[in-house]
Image (cartoon, rainbow, N blue to C red):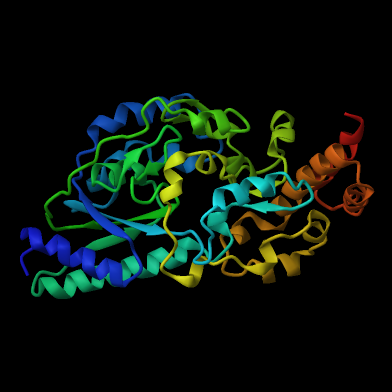
Length: 360
C-alpha cells in the first residue's frame, strides 16, 4: 500500500478502532509556532519540579530532532471513562467531593496504568502499518505521556480536537476524558485537518479550579495544580494548597467535571479502565492504614504505584486533616495519630499539619 494514498489513513483508523482507539489523526513535524509559548512557560518556572521538561528544551517542539528521521506523527485517542459509567457521572463525581472522609482518586487512575495499555496497542498498530507497507520498513517510536512530546499540540493540529482553556484537548464528540498517544514515523503521511475551537466565552474550567492553577486561558501554573502536587511533587506540599485539596488524594478532575463538553464524554471500549474496587468509595482511615507491602500489592499495574508509599501517605494525611477540620470526627484524628512517629519526615510534617486543623 502507498503511504501517500489518502485511503491509507482510513485503513489505519480502522485498525486503530479494532485495537480500542477512538480516533487517529496525522500531524506534520513543523511545530515552530509553538516554540515561543513553550519557552515562555518554562522560563516562568510553571513546570515546577518536572525538570525533564526543561532538560529537553525545544526538542519537545521538534519531533524530527527528538526522533531523527521522523516525517509524520500519527496521533491516537483512547476514551477512558469506565464502561459502566452512568449518564449523570459528572454529578456523582461532584458528590464524592462532598464526602470529606472518602479518598478521591482521579477517574483515569482508578483502573489499569494507561501507559501500559496505550503503549502496547500503539506498538500493535505500528506493526499493522509496517506489514501493509510491504518492502518499506517502517521506522517508528511510540509515546504516551512518556517522553518530552507536545501531545496536546500534535493532537490539536491533527484534528483530535482543540485546546481547551484548561489546556487539555477537547472534542465535540468526546469531551476531554481520553488519553493521547503518538507514533513518530519515518514516512510522509497526508496530514488530517485541525478543527475549530468551541469554548467561546465559557470559563467553567477556570472558575472550578480549587487552587487557581489555570492562570489564563490555555495557561497552567503546574506548581498550583492538584494533579502536580499529589503526583509529581516530591517533598512537602505548600501549605497554601493543602486545604483546597479537600479529599483529593491522587490527581484532580475538577476542570473536566465543570466542562460542558464532557456531557459527550465516551465510555472506554476496553475493560482496562474499569475502576478497581480497592480504590473506589474507600474511607481515608482505611487507605492510610495500608503498609508499604499492601500499597504495592493493591496498586500493582496501576498508575498510582509510581508515586510510592510515602507520597501516598502524605496525600492522605492532608485529606485527613481537611476531613478532621470539616467534620470534627475523631476517627480522622485517630488515624493521623497512628502515623505521628512515621520514619518519613515528610509524612510526619503533614500528619502534624492535619492534626492542627481542628484548631485552625
